[in-house]
Amino acid sequence: MLDADAPPGRSIPKRKTGDKTVTDVDVLIVGAGISGIGAAYYLQNRCPGMSYTILEARGALGGTWDLFRYPGIRSDSDLHTFGYAFKPWENEKSIAGADAILAYLAETASENRIDRKIRYHHKVLSAAWTSEDACWQVEVERSDTGEKLSLRSKWIFSAAGYYRYDEGYRPRFPGEERFRGQIVHPQHWPEELDYSGKRVVVIGSGATAVTLVPAMAGKAAHVAMLQRTPTYILSIPSHDAIANLLRRVFGKRLAYALTRRKNIFLQRMIWQFCQRHPQRARNLIRSLNARQLPKGYPVDVHFNPPYNPWDQRLCMVPDGDLFKAIRAGAASVSTGRIKTFTETGVLLESGEHLDADLIVTATGLNLQPFGGVPLTVDGRTVKLADTVAFKGMMLSGVPNLAFAIGYTNSSWTLKIGLLCEHFCRLLAHMEEKGFDICCPEVRDAAMVRRPLLDFGAGYVKRSLDELPRQGADFPWLMSMSYAADAKLLRKGPVADPNLRFSSVRAKAAGVTPARKAVA
Image (cartoon, rainbow, N blue to C red; front, side, top):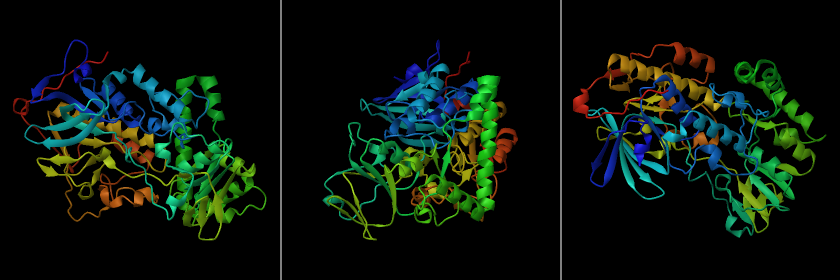
């Protein structure tokens, strides 16, 4: 029961409505991944009077890092920036695997007692805002028991990620029914799958594919990465020698802060260099790739994308593991279009045939913002494509709803931390002024609207029409600059001409969320 959310000595008000139990809470966090745990930390430390509960549809915390189980799964950002600002990353490896990241998240939740606030197997079915009561009515189903619950909350903080957990993007290929081997999607990796001594074809060239290929190469007979279009790939060290040295000299906290600043700066410089000097960046990446590939390797065929660097996210490979697998002959890359699957592999339009016993379709994700939860405001269905993102954390016309979407050109969590800080500042402002409702409003009906994510990845392009929009200028711009966001979200004013605040009488609202002091 959700009364376990209550602080010691005080229970959260609960009411019976038919066969449902209704629980009141200040902030309902949806999702117990890296964003949800981070939001909980900031909330309980900066707004200690606010009650909150985390609802997680699955049976474990960790989000992406618990869901994906394919070989070699790891971060593609360094953990000194992908980790939380408030908790040092102490592992010797800065590019780490899912197990280490999960342990870090679990430790964060445990030592801050956030794990006591997580309710697993609680899937949000819908959320309805009522202005008269100034609250969200949230319908929940327990996936383990089938029990239906209702919660009322002043705020919803959506940390449910941006893609569907139950279904990856899986195009149908001609002739795949003829293939006599096994076809697997990385998002649904069978625990018992044994690929020892098998010929493997990995279809795709994104972060998942370049992780899978070297991870499988040592055990499989051979792994071929089949790509329709090349991707920019950079080799980075899995160990940050400077970070490890600083830790020995200054201790973990100061060393972490210094390393974090260093890596934020380096990430920004690399991105700006690619944006300002795309041809020079292309030449440099090609040169670095060529040095790590066998002599005479057709670099321009397999590692020369038709777009500029950072038009899509650069793929990082720790210690050049992909290039090492290619040099050793354990892996290969083929570039071309699939004509058909055959009984024994994949036939390309060029006539090349890739023999396979196992085909892995690393073909991407299906975007699904807010966990696919239907939203209504005073009985009106919210169409996400008709909304505009405000400060990258709220939606026009939707009161008391915040969400977390990180950077696409840097570490995801850098943006999440700033959004959580600003969210807490917003809550404090409303508490101080006696406001119950906060709703962004587009004052300029003629404002130019653009896709939410200015990013060329296929999984983004497929879903742009289903996502909220962004404007051309702050506060309607989805900023991708940590430096600018740090200034605006940490120091900039909370009040804004595009943000409408209002109040309702507490007695009329009938919402009495629990309050607590954090020790």
